[in-house]
Image 1: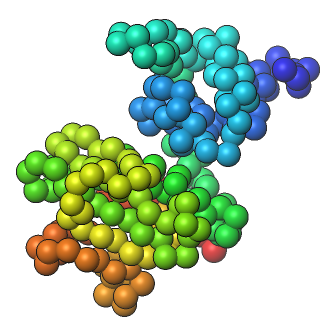
Image 2: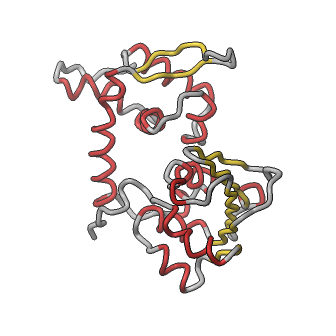
Amino acid sequence: MSTFGQFCPIALASEILTQKWMLLIVRELNAGSKRFNDIRRGVPRISATLLKQRLDQLELAGALIKKPMDNGAGDEYLLTDAGRELKNILGAIGEWGQRWARDISPEDLDPGWLVWAMHRRIDTSRMPKGRTVLEIEFTDAPKSQRFFWLLCHKDNVDVCIKPPGYDTDLTIKTDVLTLAKVWRGIGELKKEISCGHITLEGKNDLKKQFPNWLLLSIFAKIKKQK
């Protein structure tokens, strides 16, 4: 690992945190991902080899510990106090990015990552009791990333990339950019539905309730500066 040749705390912290992918990995860990594959779903463009290297570096820095899962199904990565303290740093960076970073470009539009981010921000307390299955169809995405399903239970939402074997309760059809802008708070969900950029298929009561289920990005309320 390269150094900046300074003993300033910012320089020392940057030796770890400014490496490529590192802040996104820390973001996933602070969002609740503990297993290797779940972390990688939140950072899908990183190789497995590099992800392991970055996790090892965080462990060496004292930001996480790796331990066997209780059920014996592999390892899990748990943040230490040092790792959890990075959440405030991520929040400040995210707020700055929401206000000042560049606009969304086509290269940023990853349907799988968008659904993965959304699944953590579904308010299941407002949904019908039992299981609710949401199908998301990205009309402009390649076939391999066109369909996703969210299995919503009380206090739990699972992401499926193949039909889950249950009837769909509500289908959401849209293009990736439209939903990404809504997620970021740049677009308005109800407006995009009313103008037909997002279409809903299902029972009328579920279509009416849908805008109340999606909580959007934690940075969505921060106004972007021009």
